[in-house]
Length: 279
Image 1 (cartoon, rainbow, N blue to C red):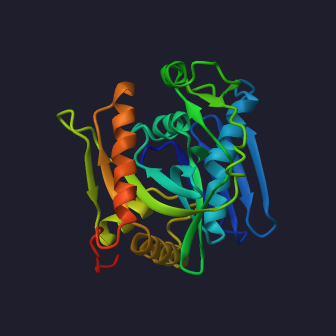
Image 2: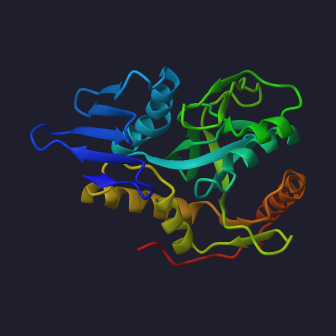
Image 3: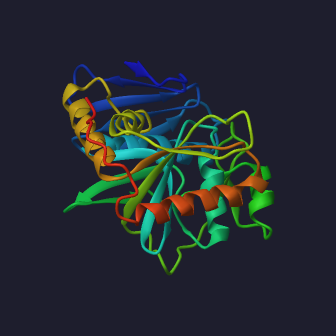
């Protein structure tokens, strides 16, 4: 058995049936997963747990872990798309990934998703696609970022967040998009400056692993596979640490800093060539 760092879920592996796992979410629900038969059954622990909570736990917690267990690198990240390419927003819960992703919509970007991103490799290109097109925001973010109230549903009975209904953008149909940069949201700085620093491959690799989904992190084969995938992504896509003082009024300046960095990446010889790997 293992528990996540916040002790919000526990995963146990059956000792009798190969590929069978049970995921327990506090006292709210449990999910029984059979990898071999590709079945997931999620059940509430009491009649007081509403359907939207079960759906949230299923699509935002269980499904990304099952996809990762089947061999994909699944990042706990948001992503937005412009001109056919995506940037990825990663960081600890509460750092503002969803708010930052949503704020890009007003800037003409398309939303890929705000929670789970599946990474694949085609040739030399790293592609990302959302497990599903999700956007979940706190009420203050909704009030600030959406002057016209969108269609909303509750995320879960224990969360004040709302799920926003986001229509597919004609410029991006929700399919895979090449990744042009990773931005890891760091802790707020002590002043009003926006800090943007290119990370080494080793730093990015370890943070990719820390911000990815696993169903069974104790499995050495899966752990090795994830390390290889994370190392390849860190070596193939530039990664940056981004820190800024939270505040809606500052978001346009954050956008500008990110756009400027993307412009620099397109200029040959600007980004440093990093040789170290992830071990």
